[in-house]
Length: 167
Image (cartoon, rainbow, N blue to C red; front, top):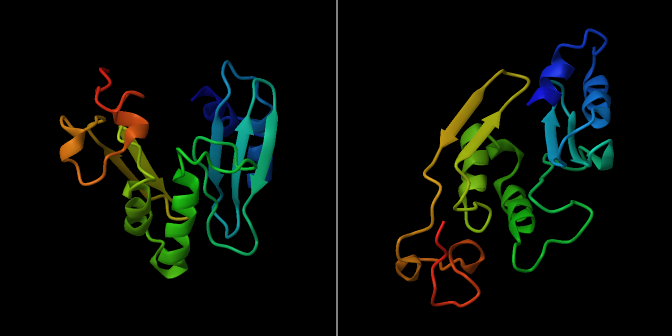
């Protein structure tokens, strides 16, 4: 993403806060979320971007060890039909700080209902250690969603519960 390349190539950026300021004010072609972590403890941010700036920036909470962002604005409650953030936060709370390893975090983002079956790429990264664990999955719904352990109508079925979505 050009936004990040520009930030990393800007000599005046010397801190995590400078990086956040830069990616917050870079003009965009389309809105999106930025979730970033610095190399020091408690350096984390979730930015809801519009075309020119931040709609809202949530800094890492001082009373917890995680900051969770899904496809809904953090200041709004989860849609009851898409409870991924609520589920992720509950799983992270149960996981605990000590088990929040790369594998533990991957387990959270892979769990139902956090994982969207159309997600093809998941990465778990650490700015402090330089670790990058990238996972490419086949993005698809089950051939027969009714044979699945969990029937997820959010992604795999049209409003008519008997018809599969053709993608």
